[in-house]
Image (cartoon, rainbow, N blue to C red):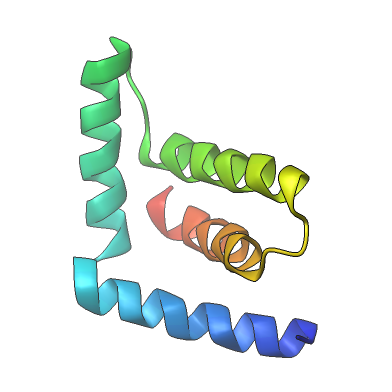
Length: 84
């Protein structure tokens, strides 16, 4: 898979997730609110995105060829600006 095809695939995944789950900023706010309760400290939507990127990077350390995790890292990085 070329870099351009991965970017195109990521755009399609982001579009599908938006259709399935609604606006990313709203979802990340909801996740941040839940994590804030779980962790007992404030969590921002941007921190949610960064933590999800870290999760995917940990998985990629196990298998750096896993395309879904690569796509997810790209997608969360792209959403980071929207959720800030």
